[in-house]
Structure formats: C-alpha cells, structure tokens
Length: 276
Image 1 (cartoon, rainbow, N blue to C red):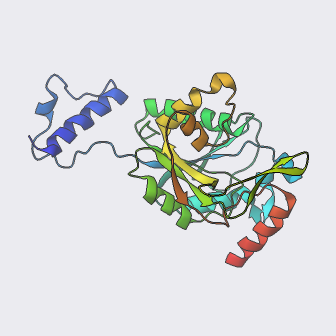
Image 2 (image 1 turned 120 degrees about the horizontal axis):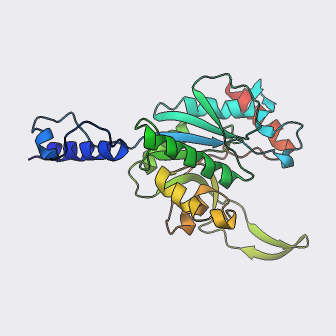
C-alpha cells in the first residue's frame, strides 16, 4: 500500500471522529481505499481570521467605540476587514462583538458573533470556543488543526502584503507566530515620571497583529488561564508563551500601528488617503 492509500485511510478515520454517523464501513478501513485513491487526502489546515471588536476604546476619547469611528470615509474596522478580505487564503473572517452591539455590517462575507467579553483575551477565547464547537458539528467549520489569525480591529493600516508574509512564514511552522518590529528606540523604565533605568534594546521587539496559531492550541492556552481571568495575557503570543511555546517573529510594518490615542486617528487618516 502506498502513501496515498494510507492518507486516504487517515482521512476516513478523521471524518468519522468528526461525524460518528459517517456511513463508511470501518470494519476494514484499508479495504475502503484502493491504490488509485490519490484524490483522497488528509484534512488540510485552513486559515481563518478572528477580529476581536468588543472594546470601548476608552483611551481614544471617542463618543462611540473607536472601531466604528469614521476614518477616510468609512469606519476604522472596515478598513481592517477590507485588508483581510483581500487575502484569498483566508477561508472566513469572524468578528467578535459585544452581546449588545448593534452595528450594521455592510459586507455579507463578514460574520459577527455576539460573544465578546470584558477583555481582548476573553473575547478571543469566547470566539474560539464558539467556532470550535460549531466545527465539531460541521467539518466545514473551524477545526483544532486549522490556523487562526487574530487581528486587532484598530490596526486598520494592515495590508495583504503583511498578512501573506505572516502566512508564508508560519504555515509550515510547528507553533505559529506574529508580525512584529525590532525595537528601534532606546527603552526607559520610569518611576514617578522619572527615568529609573535604561534597558538594552537588543532582542526587543514590538508585537503587532495578526498573530497566527492553531485554533486548538490557542484555545487550550487561553483555557488554562480562565480561572485567573486571563491575568498576564496581553495578546495571543503571550498565552502561547505561558503554555510553553516559542512563537515565531515575522517582520511587520511601521504603518501597522494600533490606533489608540486621538493623534493616531489623524495619522491613520493621512496614511489611508495617501493610498487612494
């Protein structure tokens, strides 16, 4: 029996774990696969995007949640989502919003799910929990081996170039990784508004998003911190680090900053208009 046949058997067994009612006779699974069954392949890991979008954006000083503020003619989050939509390798884009969110989404290919939590980590965990639960019932849904790219709604200057660079770098990686930039500036520690220490910037990176990890591994890493209210989890990479993994660093772009404070809106608008 060649490798194609073995892969076919594994595919059948995998389908049965997802769907116990699968009619394939498993009394002799190898009999169900011939040497010519080259078209049957093991499940291939796919890429999905998850955008936590339940925050209030209190530091931005906006009337409405900052992700819905208009920048260069459309809401900030739509600039973000349009960039994700331009990446053909993303199977689906899921936006995790607050249970009370009433925003109207103009693009049918965007799927909002109302399970956002009090923190980013809780929103991501809740979103993954729902997606994996759906995947248990439907093989077309997110499976534990699939890749999840978590991206900040407020990083509205992301481009398909950076997203594809991350996917290319992580698709065959055993852990996954994130976009990031080497720290270019001198780093200071402050006490009461005064410098107490200067830290070496060597090997220091500024984390960005997307951050790309296997859905099952990321969910498990977050699950282990639920009882601690996700204490210390500032992004997905930190959750994976606490679980014992070493995420891969992939060089991002200085333009992929997170719109956080009022001046950031002006800069983001200028940059977006310059692309038009």
